[in-house]
Amino acid sequence: MIPRVFRILLPFAAVLSAALARSEEAQPFFFIQLADPQFGMYAKDADFAQETANFEFAIATVNRLKPAFVVVSGDLVNKTGDAAQCDEYLRIVGKLDRSIRLYQMPGNHDVGNLPTPETLAAYTARFGPDHYSFRHGNMAGIVLNSEIIHDPKHVAKQVAEQEAWLKEELAKAKKDNVRHVVVFQHHCWFFKTADEADTYENIPLAERTKYLDLFRQHGVKFSFAGHHHGNQIARDGDFEMVTTCAIGQPLRKDGSGLRVVIVRGDRIEHRYYEMGRVPNKIDLTDK
Image (cartoon, rainbow, N blue to C red; front, side, top):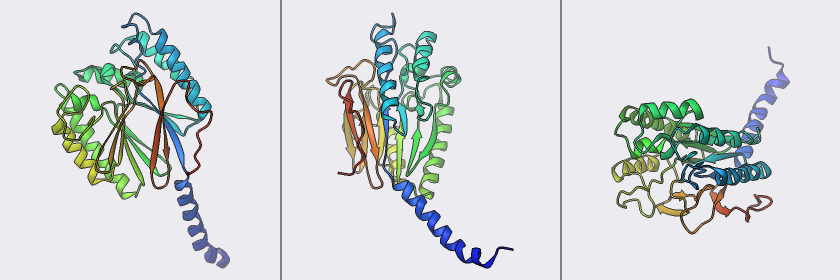
């Protein structure tokens, strides 16, 4: 039997515990997004010396800044299934501080422009699951394999399974009143406008419209992608599509670099830094 004094104090303890949990959820934190390390691209698969230099710098920078986690938005390698390129990526990412979680995902160069069950199995055997979710503070992260959405010809079963799983994850986040639900994938949903024509850069319009409607229903406000090897920010209502330049070889006006994303209680902020211009410390003060 619980003593009377503890019975009296229990409600107050529950209130205090809930208040502390809310306070912890409201604490700002930041994560780092890297896109397209793409080992082998600079030298057209002859070697990956430049990618090694860039990615070594990136991981050392992540370890110095100590984000809550780091996201690598696909195209880990340039040549699908190349053992040497895969091993070099894994060797360097293995230097990541063990206190910093790593969330990576496949790009078209990792599973092929026309992915098959075999290329998906090869990816998951070497790098882990191709879609999954995670939680940190007041944020739910949802990682998707966008390549199978972009080119589903040989993987219709996998597309259907991922879509059903996504709906379940979004429903869970909504039920749990998660403040920020953020979607990560390799391809951007759209590059400039939500109704733009299909290109190599974006998710085809029919699928794009379906997924954007799903995101809208569940309060998703941000999605982060790579693939373009340049920076681009586009919006559809209150949904923001953030495309980040490569830590590997850039193809646009921006140099190789990384994106710092600050998650606050009421909003998400982000900024891209080219290598050599990354600050010594990330200031979480709300200015």
